[in-house]
Image (cartoon, rainbow, N blue to C red):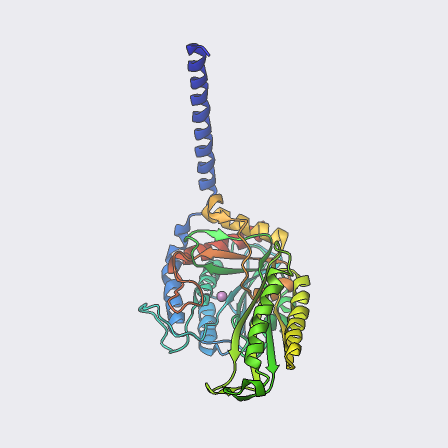
Length: 425
Ligand code: NI
């Protein structure tokens, strides 16, 4: 290669790179021009932060959300929203805001309101005032963000059709009953309010503030619970040969269940089987006549639920039989898979990207093996569930967790964007 050629090549390289740089900065500039400013939600952020911290100080559990529901209903009324139904599934609320641009469909926006039975260790000034109860999953933040969006949208009404604001109880635990998402659907809210599509949001510790994550199809797993009682023959711990020791049998069952995942399930499919509870004797010297154990199963496809239900029973019974023990088995199908619908997921991605830019929305988030009772709403109507970054906080359900108030304007902005584009003209 001559020096002239070399020089020519470098020149071509350089101009190519300059062109690319200009292209990408031009593209970023256009995207930014298209992006909404988060600043217009700053005023509401201050107010919504106060609401969030009030809710955090006053957590309530499952369906027993009397104070929380009263607080939410009062706020909604103060925004000039006059169609508010309370007492749905005990303490759930649906409030309707009509757009100012004429007829159109109704979309549902959902927040959960319940806390968890955990002793708070966040050391924040707004820590729970009720010992043993805390907002450890950020539902205080979800409620405050949807209230913030309600205030903004009730003031601007720059959309057609209507929005149905859904505030539900008992996402975490039904207190011996079914979960709140299911009960709200069973209470007929989708039909009564003509909701055609429904959207949900959850905070995500470890994801940066101002970022969103979502995926098409399954985004959270199904949750089933099981219980096994091993019935043997009790006796003195010094004379094991006179007993049928259910503790040793139960221990073998726990080990046996591990092979359902590692040896009998296709490795590319997801199955979690966790034994989490174990109750035996109250005494060091007594072999009990029975042992109870319970746990949870997480799956992403219906076939694996059938497999888990059948094989957990077969494994437990088979092992117990070897030793002459018996097994009682109970399997409860609890929360279904949370499945995002194609068009609504595209809408959610577009709304988030308009707010924070394309690179701040991960549209291929890996499915989570946790479960979420918004799944029931997605079984009733098409819709999508999105995660919003909560920054580097403790994980959800951790005693040191606290919802990050910096996420509030992004959450409000997402809801507003979603409504104004989905119900735009
Ligand atoms: Ni939660």
